[in-house]
Image (cartoon, rainbow, N blue to C red; front, side):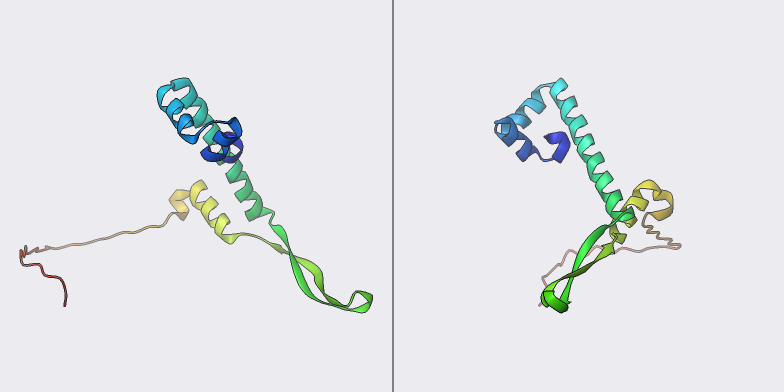
Length: 124
């Protein structure tokens, strides 16, 4: 369950144990901790696969509107294929960080003078 969903609470519930019991076992048993880490890696892989699917393949979103003819009224009139630009951006940043990461550069030349003032008061 942990590998499928990456959620400790739900995995513990499915195993019939308290969440704290799972953490206690993880902290006291190296073999269990290694299995836990592997399960979380698998859950992350599943999330990444779903993000890729939504970014690349998209999903169909229903479109609702007024129907004509014998089915007159409001209803589903079609579908629009949607894609996630946000997920595509995140995937690009992960796959090619040297090209897509956010860059913040500060280039300062010269001298900086700092004055220490021990008379701090809250603003009026």
